[in-house]
Image (cartoon, rainbow, N blue to C red; front, side, top):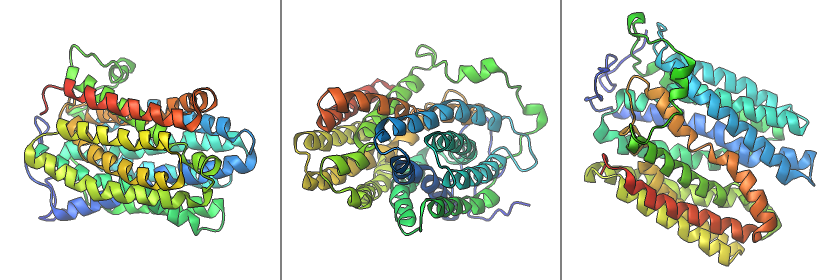
Amino acid sequence: MVHITDDSVPETAPRSGPPARPVGARWLRGFVLANFGMQIALQTPSTFLIPQQIAAIDPHGKVTAYAWASALGAIAGLVAAPLAGALSDRTSSSLGRRRPWMLGGVAAAIVVLVGMGLAASVWAVSLGALALSVAMGALGAGLNTVVPDQVPVGERGRVLGWAAVPQAAGLALGGALVAVAPGNLAGYLVLAATLLLVLPFARSTPDRRLPRAERQSLSWSLLLDGWRIDPRRTPDFAWALATRFIMFLGYGLGTLYIPYFLSDVVHRSGDLLLVVAINAGAVVAVAVVSGRVSDRLARRRPLVSLGSVVMAVPALMLAAWPTWTMTLVSSVLLGIGFGVYVGVDLALVTEVLPSRTDAARDLAVAGQMGSLPYVLVPVFAAVIIHNLGGYSGLYVASALSSLLGAVLVWRIRSVR
């Protein structure tokens, strides 16, 4: 039986409208801890372990091979995450709608991470990235959706601002953990262990059981409807997705190839963890404040736009002066801008979801707007680096994308 304290949210939150009862400090601590477990295991392989594995297997073709691995993982997420979300919305298990997906996602991701540690070819690593994306899609279908399920609108900036802390710090913590692990397999095992942080929250959080009589049928047309974004019917949701896609495209162009930028341009490949930690520290310092400010002002768009503009500045600085000192300065400024943005971003998205009945599916689609750019970034980056100005051209493209995001967010009308 799930243990519910006075500090928890009610198990029988109404489905007809947003939750009204504030979440307590204990619930928030558990949610943030669970997100640390998920984010460390999700982010660390693509920045620290996969590039090392691929460079060791194919040092001359590492850029193209890494592009394949990143693209396969991102494409898998495009299919798996909305499907898992739609199934989560219709799960009538005695454990609830979200809890089975948290538990199943953790179990699947642990198995995949162990397998990735044993991979010895580029294709094996790439298939591991694909499988990890699927497992994390299942986990996210349970964990991410508790916010619209259980958190009142006026508290979502605060809650999701705190949730941005593991999103920002997870990569640095994961990098530190794998840095002390003796080898790739040990690194993957450490990441698998961090997923256990999800279990206390999965056990204790209230999770409304969906009566079978209320369960809607699932069809391919219903699933595809999640991707048929109609700007005429749900214009604000469409613009929120467009803004998110453009913003993460800019962020991906500015960050995904940092490992190779450090080794090929500034010749400081051993300082990757330092750069990541500086950036994460800046994000953490700002994100929680940004979320609280947006709740107090009851405004989301100005902070999204401000963060987008700030993110463009360090990208242009690094394009003009690709030095080690400017790398450190840019890491701080990029972290500040992204912290302002990410502290408000998902709070805004939850306020324009087309349907509470399909909240998990629609949130999964919104989540993929943060992943889909990573399908395109390797392709764009390979063309830009080789033909359009090298890494300086890459960072100019990052800045332009961020500035476009600052404009698009103002097309959303129903959220201030």
